Image (cartoon, rainbow, N blue to C red; front, side, top):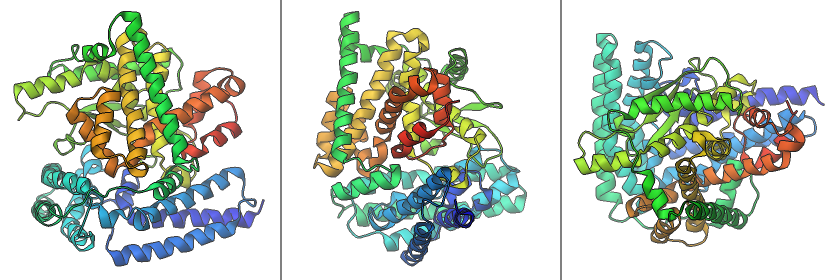
Length: 544
């Protein structure tokens, strides 16, 4: 082992991370690196071209280190740093997000971390909010100059909706500043007014200028999709093989739902519809979710599914108004560099403006079985437990910065199945049916993603597939199909779950003495590595 190579990698590791955060300061702040608070990236063509040139230089320097001169753990770190840069270069030069997707700009001025997480005094967080708001007009002006004349229609349509909701999100920043000194309050108010105007103007520009000439051409194509699998998940597996695995999992889940139907004398469609009948009232929703969160934690402890690091604290809160259209429930975990350990479990309640029928429909969607399965996914033993282990385990800078959607979402999706297998909710029919319903949806996402981007499937065909195979209503199926046009990585749930099930089948008995806790703790000690690296990590890990 070369000491020189190890030292050189340590220096490069810092350089690569800092260069990555130069173009992703919002992500850095979300990880808990608050020196990046209030910063927006320069997304102009000139700036990103300069960024790309430096990234290419860093990649060459990483290559020059050589793998054999590094210990195995640092070889992994070098590979992660390469993928980190390659992924950003893919977005800039191959999928060309900043040229084709207006949403790439609209997700940047995110104030959620400053508003929701009490990591610093109000005046510090409000000062960061002011900086973000003050930069919004220039950010969206850059978008107008950079976005191509003909854009994919699904991207434009959703971007218009997001732009219309930004002023409401910016208002939350001003609400935070209400407790700050008067001069700061005033400057936040002025910055918010200009940001509101910029967001509304940008939405109108998209509506009037880009939407009329938008096209249906959203596809990555097979070659770029294969590249996406590598830069995001370290996978060389042909897309056709992944598609076949997704279809096989869909069939397994459908067969199991059919078997439950035979055992209970109830058709699968009726089993799914029956879930909606048992739901809380609007007033009962958040208290019920808090109770389910406590029960899920106790289930993990009593069944010895995984170690629960201390301290731990997860708040259940109502989803902010600006995010109502983005999720039904979600977790905001503490980043690996963040001091507070608090997780925030967002649950979307009814909109006060809805009709009685809309309110009833939403509460039927938030039925008790769905809430139990979602709580397993988001909190225990899903995302929040994963975040606690990530923070507890000694990780390199590269592993703290790297994030795999397929490992993260795959773990949470796997937890749904593993919890039912371990007897969650008494392994009731409703618990397994709810788990299967979500599994069918995730299978269809993988199939739609690959089929639409590489096989010529249309949005309409994906919608019909979602209706037939995942038992979705048309409006829900259409939204899911459209999501696959701009977020092909929603294959991550099934892709990650299947990889975890694969290593469990291979190694649980031989390396972990059939102990689920030992196996799960080992998985969680890896951070969030590319799913393509998982088998090698498990094979070479010490069995605790």
